[in-house]
Length: 477
Image (cartoon, rainbow, N blue to C red):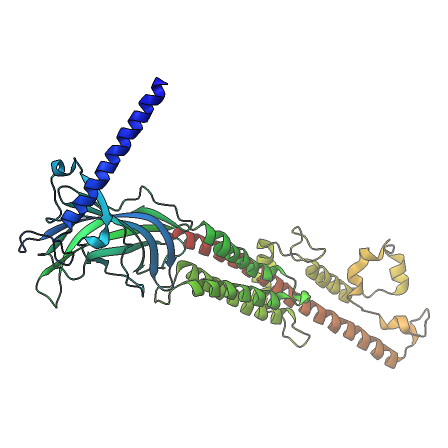
């Protein structure tokens, strides 16, 4: 029971004290505002300047519009100054030291954001001010600012930006209102992390500028917001797809020419890169500085265009018909004999152990058939026929027949008779076989040249894609 009584007494005393302070605060406000004017600068001597201390706290970066070059930030702005007309003695008002009154009742400095980029010119929110007995006024007000920011996208998406927030008095010069910094930099202790930008600091500097319209100095405080873009989103959504698509361009050379899809593959890759470049161009401001990713897209598109043009040229070589000229000797030596071994280009049945393939074998066998015209009986007395037709492949390429085989008969004294017309027909058929073989060999050689060139350009463009990607990543700051 005693404890309950003591608690009741304490509560009564505390409530009475608050009621007393409330009465004194009301009386104090009436006394202060009796002859007070919020329209005039609150100084005893009009020749002296009024010092205003500015402190800015960055709470959040709401948006960075690169295309319109506008930074939208949420700030807490604190202004502190001394009002010579709002002072009182604590003893006269029951020790009352601080009161909070609406900011519209007192004089306020007309500090504005010089580089504001918003159509709405309204200032901070009309919150209460904290008034101390010595005349010190502290005004804390939140504000959402839209400021102009020169965006440099040369190294996008690895870029960093510097956006200025310049505060100063709009009508008072430095001889009337002097602005000082509360801290050497903006306060970032309550900063809410942004998903796209990292804030690396907010240094502050004071400037005194002499404008051409006026001879008086005008001080201002500039806060420089140091921002670094988080590039992970753009790497996975813009750079990595382009990097993978660019590797499809060299693979177009590996695609067989008879498939008919070599050119269409290059055109498809080019269209895909164009779509990605349009996505980047829509978000970037129109300026002379081309973004780093834009240069990468342009270089990749140029490479894909060159690969498509080379593919058309190589396909023209591949489909050389019988009317084409034979492959030059230097091309046979350089491309067919040497380059094919370097780039491991072999035909079916050809291996690295026999680099010249069937061409030399057929030519040597053709020479043997021209020098050896065997009689059927002599041929029968020679080596036995091969076990498999494949063992005598080259015999199918050359047809050389002794005219005596087609004579009516052969006696002991020589040839009894022979039809010259039959001999000419057989020789004509043999020459047709020889021409057909030569034509097939010529077409095969041109196809071999085209295949080797495909393989050469494939590796060249693979190296170009790799080096180009390394250069783009290496230029990132």
